[in-house]
Length: 215
Ligand SMILES: [Zn+2]
Ligand SMILES: [Zn+2]
Image (cartoon, rainbow, N blue to C red; front, side, top):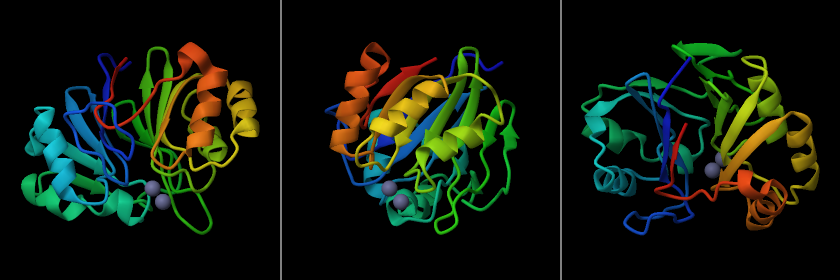
């Protein structure tokens, strides 16, 4: 099982660490198995590279990039990032897989979901359960969590953009699926974030650029 997993939100429209810059979009750096994986790249590389620099992350250290879906606020930073990364990272496009697939030990893509907008989530197996990271969750956050559960039974954390209006029924579904912790950000919506905070209490993690979560 993976040990010492670190998740860092490196691009987001919400602020957590005041030393970093916000921007519309999402990117999360995942450190696992001594590998660094970048999930999404935000809208542009300047902010992304600035934030990584403030966090002491060398772009060349990133070995894999997983793109959730082909929207500019998730892919816009790719070109500039790859230049800084000297094109060392392997890039997994949103339609890279059709079903849950392991991309490195205990790290999976859910495979592409969605009829109109193809989107994949990244899933990391950890001791307390699955960690599910989503870009915008256009195919539906509940559908994406359901798909991820084909990889493992327990869901420890769901993090990223959930793309919601009113989150009441989603929160009910999350609880029924046994989702332990949530860290919504990006396109989740202010109302939905507030509802998650009220319902999940100490298991709600306020997410934003610069937020570091260690598992
Ligand atoms: Zn989107
Ligand atoms: Zn988005």
